[in-house]
Amino acid sequence: MRQAVMVKPGKIELHTVPEPVPGDDEVLLRIQRIGVCGSDIHVWYGKHPFTSYPIVQGHEYSGRVEAVGKHVKKVKPGMRATARPQLVCGSCGPCRRGDYHVCQNLKVEGFQANGCAQDLFVVPEDRLIPFPDTMSWEQGALIEPASVGAHSTGRASDLKGKNVVVTGAGTIGNMVAQFVKARGAAKVLITDVSDFRIDIARACGIENAVNVLNEPFADAVGRLFGSDGFQAGFEAAGVPATITDLIQYIEKGSEIIILGVYEENPTINMGFVGEHELKLIGSLMYKQEDYEEAVKFISSGKIITDPLVTKHFPLESYMEAYHFIEEQGDRTMKVMIDF
Image (cartoon, rainbow, N blue to C red; front, side, top):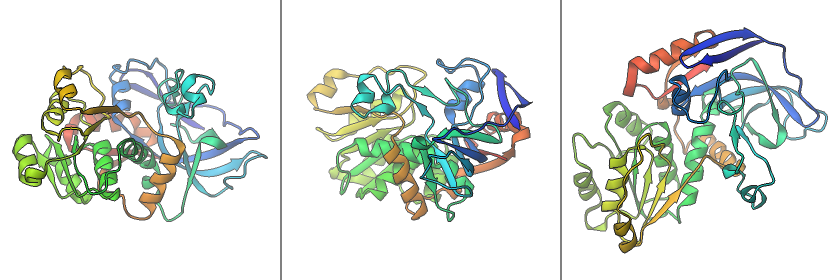
């Protein structure tokens, strides 16, 4: 079978390797789509701090069940499925209390372990998430980033009736904002510095989308929320200025959930945070129930995905996909690798 291997930063080779065989509790998936995400780009540039080479990428994906082990009961051949990419130890403190997504020894497929960029991929049944035939292969590959939105919005207190700001309108910020809406927020504002991403946000039903290069953050907040202000913030941009804006303008006693990956560590006025009794809450990845909720919300139409897919490339053109992302810059959202 074909396997795409990133042998070093900026170079992917297509190898021919033996087909894997599932064990008794495992499922063999024939991969259909892989989504390229921002973390993959860091690996491409050699800037991911926890990835070594060679590595097989791919952690956002959809596949058809090809075969199942004799103990597998969740799926049958022919069904559609994806799986969580987390490899956990099961014995550390977080794992023992059920927080395996922040395992002390966490490894993620595509980064610290080989991912799914190959024709056939084996996953254990306990990490598998089936999805209905009514969902497309593209939607199946977007379950992973949608799960980030499901998990992060679940980290906040009840969002129903609250005004909410999401900073960063990339794929993750977009998914977060959509989940905020689906959880019953009163008004949702999403901000970015890219008109392209702002337009995609609006196409996904997030009407209040603002380019802060054209309308400053404080002005947009005042115009939309008035004296009511906003009571929850989600930082998905990974830029020091955005976390600073959220802290400065959010209502006292409110929550800010942080998802962004920062190349530059922000300086935060912790005295201000203390005096305003703000809660800064971290959010990492997802759990099994977040994947299941993502499937439910996507299949029901509460989460819109079609505008997020910018372009498709075949597996043989994996490197071209990265070059396209480099060339397009902020005019691309989700690039798909097709099998």
